[in-house]
Image (cartoon, rainbow, N blue to C red; front, side):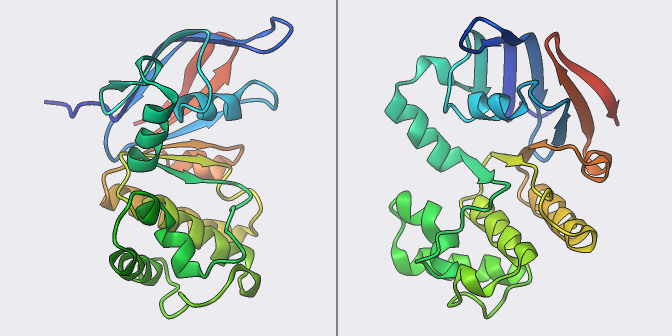
Length: 227
């Protein structure tokens, strides 16, 4: 029996101010541990789609479920709670808070979820070690390279064992060698923690490691490749 989807999108339509339809009839699902790449031309709505999946915006029409919970049937507060508990983010611009140590940055999702600070920091140090930054928990963002900051971002996205990881161009600002290492780490951690992952990317190398690469267009999503 196939596992229940971690993410399910049905009949999504989204317009922008002025009435232009970005996409409609969009449907897909992702299973636990599955990595899906979303590709497409600039301006087609890839980042908008991530915002919809995260519940930061709502579609004009359609249904989005994370772990069986329908975002459109929730209050703003309930969607915020679901994001905090079930979703991890890896942003292209990292968003590492400069006034917090690396361990504090990574621990933040647990602290916001009201975990004990000492336990959250211990988990953060363990995960920093897993991403190759052991012993660096007391450092600050200013002491890091771009690749190291992306590793911190991945650790922060994974620390609360989310059911779903959303990543916007996670290797976009990195040199090829660092990008390859970060991508391997991302895939390994997503598989290990059985998190479904949706990655917006222009990179053929990122698309190649995904279970499916989908191309977004105004008519929805079409399969580019899959296995």
